[in-house]
Image (cartoon, rainbow, N blue to C red):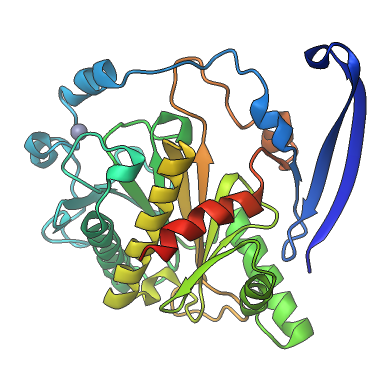
Length: 345
Ligand SMILES: [Zn+2]
């Protein structure tokens, strides 16, 4: 199931007095999609000239003024849904407010605040905040789908801090509903379908079983959710969350939302330990109420560069233009760190 190719590069390194140096590169193939990634952990030790310590105080102070997502402005500064979609205009649950994205790129594109606090670091989020955010997002998806059944492809996403693509500091998620899947969702749907047809079993349950047996990338399995470090990651410090018997995001019920929130908090604690401050999270969901033979709802968490002035991006020519990821973190090490967080439950 897990295909690897090794390459060794040799050169005289000025870092070692021009002695002959060797670096190992692992090429890893995603068992489902065939997408390759490259792992060279020595890369994480390379000098990044753009980085240095960063004090958030000034940034928080500056962006806090007139922040649209802060409690005193949210009512007057964020958009409202049309009254035929949502008569109240917005969805509110706990500290979460769901409202339309002011500059959408999906048929239905909402933003949801996670907290009333203007800024929280990775380890500071509460399980109740995540849970309310998921429940309010599910409420939004179900409301939209009831009015527009063609909008059956949903994504639930979190970009945290500027290196992840977030343009606003205040923690928030984004929810999209479209009539067609994203490129990656379609690839995964087709590949899951083909795997099921060929093997008469779900790829996702085979993956979970196999990883549990091997142990080195398996993190935890609890209440119908399996957590793994991806064998062939799309990003650094990648955690894959697989729902053992769900196909679409909208199938999550209140107890699934509570369990998922607990898992998210554990991953964030692991990220805090790894020194991660910025990250992306997304879902890959089958169509709502549609047939998605062999597909399991799953999510991916990846870390992004530290939010420093003039930081080095982790998307270069290989990632951006060849769609092949160079990863600096060994998935097996990510699993070790994450396992500790889940064990303390
Ligand atoms: Zn704010």
